[in-house]
Length: 246
Length: 246
DNA sequence: ACACGTTCTACCATTGAACGGAAGCTGATG
DNA sequence: CATCAGCTTCCGTTCAATGGTAGAACGTGT
Image (cartoon, rainbow over all chains, first blue to last red; front, side):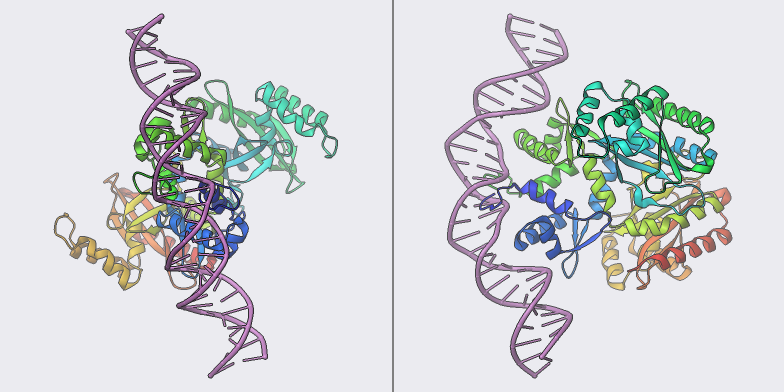
C-alpha cells in the first residue's frame, strides 16, 4: 500500500498482528502489539480497529486487544482437522477409558508434529494447554510415527536438516529412529517434559494409504507395557483411518 | 485500496474470504470461494495466495482452498476463551462422570450463546461437531442463564429485538423466561434439536461478579431430576468461577 | 495542584500497493 | 482435435493505505 516504508502488503501486516500474540497470551496492549508486530502505532491501531469491526479481533476499552470470538468460531467450525478430530474422538475416548492414559492426536506440519486433540488421563488435571502444541519430529513419538511413513522425498528433505554437524543430533541417529519406527509400526521415545514417562505413537492411515495423523499415548515408565499398548493403539488407528474419506 | 469497485478495504476482503466457508465445510474451490465472497476471481486468487504464503490459508493443487493449520494453531493457542476453558474442563469432567450427561459451556456473543466446550455423554457418539455452535438466547437454556444475569441496559437492548410483533415470540414471554431464570438461579428449556431432551444451565460468575459463561447439561426427559442436576451444576459453576481471574 | 510521561485516538496529504480485465495455461470432456 | 471450465499470471490505472503529527485521556511523581 501507499507509503509502506517496510514494503509489505496489507495481508502481511494483518498476519503479523495476529501472530504477534505470544503463545498462551490472550490479551495484549495496543502499544505492545505495535511493538511486537513492528508496525507504527497508528497503523497498528487502524488495522486492529478494522479487524475488530469484523469481530476477528476484539479491541476493548483502554486499547486491550484480544482475538475475537468470531475468529475462534470460524476457525473451529471450518478447521482443516475437523473431520480427522471427529473421526478420532470416539476411538480416543476408548483408549482413554481402557488404558487410562493421556491420549493425543497429531498431524505433521513442516518438520514438527502439531497436536490437534488430547484427552487427559482420568483423575489428572486436564491440560488443554498443550492442545495446539508443537514438537519437533525427532523428539516426539508422534513426530517419528508421522515422518516414518511419509514419502522418501520428504524424508530425505527432512534429514538434510541434520546434515550439518553443528547440532547434537546426527542424521544417522534420526534415520535410525525413523527406520525403526517404520519397521516396527510404532514409535517410542522417552518423554521430553518428564523423563519418567514414555511416548508411544502409531500412524493413522487413510483410505488412500497416506499417513495423515499419529495417535499416541504418554505413559509413566512403570506402566510401560508395549504388549498391551501397541495393539490397542493400532486397532484404534485403523478404526480412525477407516472413517476418513481422503 | 486502489480501484476497489465495491469500495471495501483489503481487511474487509480478507474477512470475507475467511467467512466464505460455510459451516462445517473445510475445503472450497477457488472459483466457488470467489463467488461466495463476491470477489473477482483474480482478486480472490491474489488474496488466497498471499494468505496461504503465511499459512493462514492452504491453497492446494487445483485451486483447493482450506483454512491453514497455522491459523488453527494461532487461534487455539491464544483464544480469548482459553482461560475459561482451562478452568472449566476439570469441573466439566466431574459433571460428565457423576451425572453421565452431555455437558456444555457457553459464552454470550451478541444475542446468541456461543458454545465453547462440550463433553459428550459416555457411550454416546462424540459430537465435536456442535462445538463452536450458536443458539439464540431465548431458545437455549445457556443463553437464558447468560442473559438473565447481564446488566439491565443490555437486557433492555436485547428485549427491543422482540418489540415488533412480527415474530412469534413476544417480548413478554422472553422477559418472563429471563426473570424466572434470574430468580431461580438456573434456566431450563425443552430441547430444540430433540424435543424429548431438556437443557438446564447455570451462570458462571467470576471474581468481579460478572456472569462470563453458562454451564449446562442436556438430559433426556426421563432422567430429568432437577433436585440432583441443579445443585451439581451450581457447585461446579462456583468452582469454575473461583478459578477465573477477571 | 501542576508538570510530565505514557498510551490511545484522530487527521490528512502523499504515493505506491491493490485492483481486475484480459490473455495464457492446464487438464478434462465429447 | 476442438471445446470448455477453472486456475494462474500480467500490467497499466487508480485511489486506499500509510504514518508523522497532534490532540485527548489517564496515571504518576514532585
